[in-house]
Amino acid sequence: MKVMVVGGGGREHAIIKSLKKSEKIDKIYALPGNGGIAMDAECVDIKATDIPGAVDFAVKNNIDFAVVAPDDPLVLGMVDALNEKGISCFGPKKNAAIIEGSKVFSKNLMKKYNIPTAAYEVFTDGKQAVKYLEGAKYPAVIKADGLALGKGVIIAKNFDEAKNAVKSIMEDKVFGDSGNEIVIEEFLTGPEVSVLAFTDGNTVVPMVSSMDHKRAKDGDEGLNTGGMGTIAPNPYYTEEIAKECYEKIFVPTIEAMKKEGREFSGCLYFGLMITEKGPYVIEYNCRFGDPETQVVLPLLKSDLFEIMQKISRKELKKEDVEFYEKSAACVVMASEGYPVSYEKGFEITLPELNDDEQIYIAGAKKKDGKIVTDGGRVLGAVKIANNLKDAVDGAYALTEKIHFDNAYKRCDIGKKALEYVRR
Image (cartoon, rainbow, N blue to C red; front, side, top):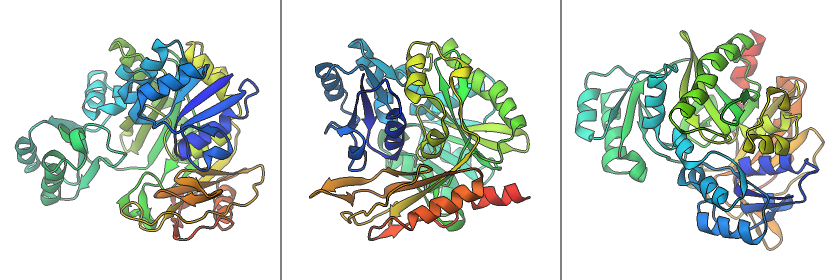
């Protein structure tokens, strides 16, 4: 079969490497892919948001199945457009992708169906928002309604910071039209957990839990990034908490979407916080997380393509999804200066890999036959091991074998999780 994967980052590289294991697939195309993905798929110079271009390519090349991975094309309706041409897809339709496309929608959904989440208010007027913030408790969380490359959330420590956040989002439009509406919500505390889940709109099957590290610097200091590393499974996510999440969050969310006439099919990402009152939803994503995918998919024992096909046919069963009882760690190697400004164009030297190692390329391109840096997050070095410590140590050992000028990485990925395990 011919398969088309839309996207060009580390997440898509992880998806493609997993799909390559399937005997059912003869050819994989990546739109647009990147210099590293080109080692595992044929890259096609069509932007992930170019819906007419992607549909035209799929029709002309007799694509049997499409995996739409990033949020933008999902929210814009690429799955709908491909389905109209008779092409089966993995990913939610436009009316379901709104669960990530609008934070106002997702918060209202949770409130309506009693899914645990932080208390909140919605504002379309900046002055009213500022007036509300005068009497708010701090820290407070201010979120732009729409997509903002994972950076549309500001945690304000006091009124002045909150006021400036409202101004930058709603008046200065730092996130464009995504800031036409904002959500102001209470600040929750506790360990964060990411859980990706396969669902066909009826059955929901959670994957292995993970922990992301969003801040740029060690000790969770510095600016928010797209993610500097991940570990899986997340030790804070116990069997007891998993059961509670399944009953109070995962199943109710899928059922709520169905009741709203927005049946969700694909991968639904649950961003959770384990508070003193139990697990709460911080956010939903309508797709695989990045870089969570880089540690979750290497632990998948089942055939990813078969799972995706069953989801597209609404035939998913819990027994279709099986994971290895191992651990994985991903250390992101970025360009110095990320996420603000950084140089590009440095040659990347990659080592030979063992069976329990992976390198997922995120920001790189081919130039004169070489792979060179072309983004902030350049790649993720992944190690699979029998325990979390060996996975973390192995991922860092792998980074030492990878070379490019201007490289930067956090040195404490998995530290909190390991400290918790040792308690």
